[in-house]
Image 1: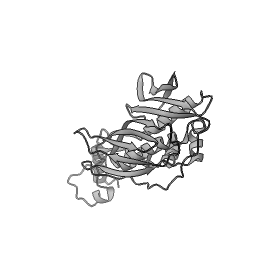
Image 2: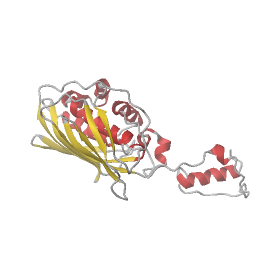
Image 3: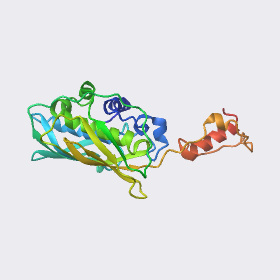
Image 4: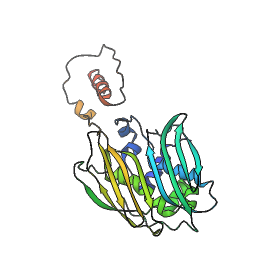
Length: 284
């Protein structure tokens, strides 16, 4: 399997997670990953899609865990391994011996998958909250069922709408709310109620950063789901001077008769060195 940029764009509209590390190739190149990466929850949804093709009846997921081990790049090959268990399954997204993510869940059969809550309009700009101060807010679980059916046709038909709505909200919580702009989703552990399957609104509480490694967590609570999302604050992208600013600088030295080899010229210091050399040679 391969996830291309078109599917990333559609998943962003479905989930409301517009974090640029997934959406913006130029921004992603400046991050610790060096390229656009696939949403962790998108991988989880693909796992449910794969498993749903083996289901005979609609299901309600009672508990689900996910661990995002290493980034899966847009355009990178992967496969999904499925190990069915009694009323559950263990799954992994991998390429050869390398594992991108692991998912395990339990379920019970139901008569219908219900109807998702009404989708709200989401902001497309992620926040940059204070990592030392707890924050609490309410998050809705609605989504567009038509778009979900386009991306995950079997899962949308066989997995309860409440499960899908919470999963989609989880990537929006981490990627847009807390940690937000500079986030790295580590995984989650969610337990769903057997009694309330209507969905609606979750109360979310983001805990302050817990260590020098940037660990943090978000608790989600409601009468239909309880659990925790774990994440990291990743190093922010360094803002470099644009070409328009560099052109105003007076550069010392004439490199017009020199040849330069710059290693790693696509981002960071290497990119800035390349720009400066090009300017000094009259390349702009």
